[in-house]
Image (cartoon, rainbow, N blue to C red; front, side):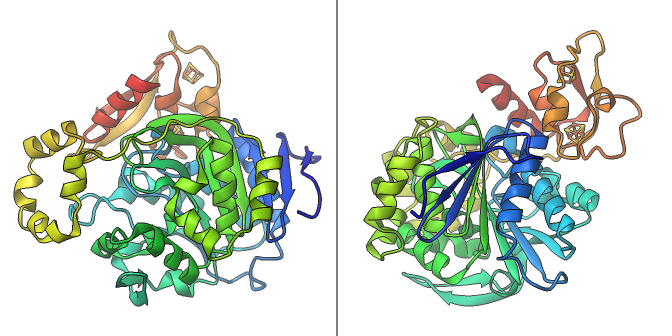
Length: 422
Ligand code: SF4
Ligand code: SF4
């Protein structure tokens, strides 16, 4: 470490941002409680890393958030749309316009009629911010050698001029933690992702040796704790951490959230391969304070472990028409063999309406709105044309002053689950 941690509030920034200067990276940590603070933190991150950005403003910049399933960011599952919005705005301020939001969700591979991008409103969001979207499960592939197998990787992940990795901090029943390094699994095409689990730790290292995002901006605003990555609980941390060295950023995150890096297979391997040193571990231990002791994911039970044996994959495939039936899935969920249930029923949400009598004028809905709609315009009729129906405002309203009109479909279960834990 060249110098001690520097904590500062830049002239324009509304929030506290700290930098940690390491041998291999300058980590930047911002505390963010609203969209403005998210934007200020991201602006600072992009500004501090502007030398890394491509010289040509026409360069293709790929944003790789965690859009693994159809549960929104407030449930702790996917990357917060406000961070993606802040990154897009910041890149555009720096003159970059050829921007694509890309991921290869786990849901929607077998169940092809589930469109995670549509369910998370990424399609409307991308139209609003005038950027492209790309489902990495359905694009050109390049065969890449992993530790255990060859796997097809979305070729754009190797060809884009610059990649910004935007993972979410989540607990993970198999990997312990899912964040920077683990997020690249979404670049593996479709069913090929299964190959990763033949030796998850070694394969994650291989992926990070092949795919090289230039910058990692991590969503720790609302993290996931407990039974992650699909069935955990949201945990508000209110942080964004960024750097360009995936190993150091992940190591720093373990300290921030109170996880033991030595129990995380891929970080152990990274240490053995020299991707970070004893000195880095000491410096992080000394300079970065834990902000929370996140609730770890419980170990998978015996039946879940058996069901995931690669030797039984053929049987699982054969049985898919039976196991995908609603009653069987529900039983598997109850037995904790699977982490979540997926409804095939799409939503037809028309609008969010405000009940003026119940509204406390607290402004919480505006703080969470990823298109920046003002408090007084949220939930008014006719709906503001910036509204993408993401329901962030509805989720966070403390007095149930916002009501949904139209069919909730798959959202119904998500809403019930969220309201039960928050
Ligand atoms: S969050 Fe709910 S109570 Fe607060 S201003 Fe918005 S609508 Fe009103
Ligand atoms: S008003 Fe509510 S539903 Fe519409 S974009 Fe903003 S947060 Fe999403």
